[in-house]
Image 1 (cartoon, rainbow, N blue to C red):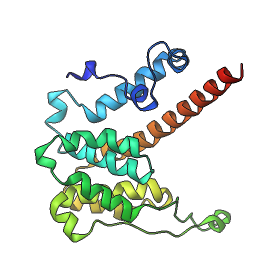
Image 2: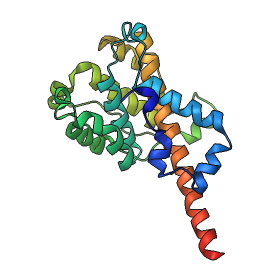
Image 3: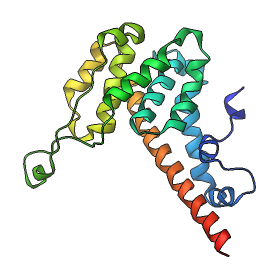
Image 4: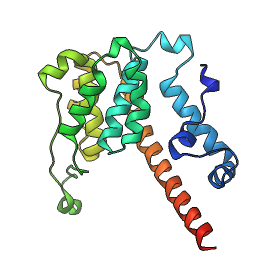
Length: 213
C-alpha cells in the first residue's frame, strides 16, 4: 500500500463513510481535511528517501510512540490503530505489551507542572514524572525509552519543559532534528484525538436530531 492510497485516518477513526452527514461536514473544509491527512503521512509514512537518510527516527518507533501517547490519553481505539503496525512486525515483537504496561503505570489525569514564579503559581500542580523501568528498557532500548519519557512530559507536564529533558534525548542518541519530529508527532496525536472526539460528538448530535425529527 502506497502512502497516497491510505484512506483518510481521521475518517477511519471517527467512523465516517462516504456520503454520510459527517463526510459532508468535513467536505466543507477540504484544505483542513487534506492537511491533516498529509501531516499523518509525513509523520508515519515518510516516503522521501532523502529525508529517510537523515533520520534515525524509525517508522516502528513512530508507531510505538503514537500507541503510548494514545494510551496516555485513554484512547483505546487509537492504541489499536497505531499498535497494529507493531503487532505485524516481527522486529517489534513484545513492544505493544510493554507499551501498554508502561502507559498503565504512568497514566494520570494531569496536566501537571509549575509556572514561573508569579500570580499563576497558585495553579501549580505536582504530579508523577515517568521513566521506563530497567526490564522494559532492555527490550525497547535507550532511544525509545527516552522518547516515551518525553511523550509523557509533553502530554502530562507541558509546563515543565526544560533543557534537561532535551539533553536526556540527546544523551540517548536523538538528533535535534528527530527531537523536533518526535515532539511534532506527540502534538499531532493530541490534535487528532481532539478532532475525532469532536466529530463523534457531532455524529451523536446528528443522530439524536434525526431520531427526534
